[in-house]
Image 1 (cartoon, rainbow, N blue to C red):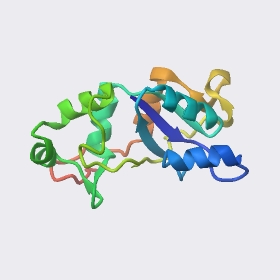
Image 2: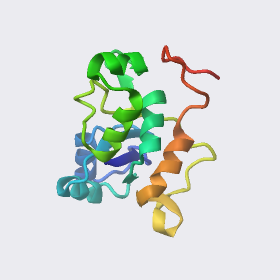
Image 3: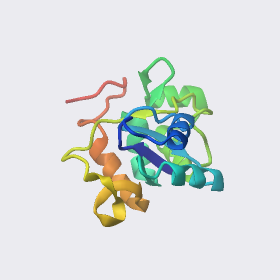
Length: 164
């Protein structure tokens, strides 16, 4: 499963890239979506490579995302009780299946766009690709430390509220 994060804003975007970003539901900076690793996804990512960064999501990061950043419909945080009620499985097993691409966010009644904070210590150069020391383009497994830097501080309580 690819984690795709929008890095750059809305100024001077090519029309084809703007259309693709809209189709991916990446309308704002620091928003993230999860895409299956298919040829169609790879082609769409190639079109928007100058505006997003992406890589493979790990199980641990998927677990942290489910617990602290993903929202159910109605903008409610996800708790173990909610997941047990909806799917009959706990959050850790859901996170593992999500990272492997065996289950989709739609099946879990989770919003497709994940709103993240800007990364702590900032972005690298937002006009350069990752291979040359920037933030854009494919970064493989290195997307996971970036997502960790973008997650909110503190632990999430069982009721879905966050400790500070």
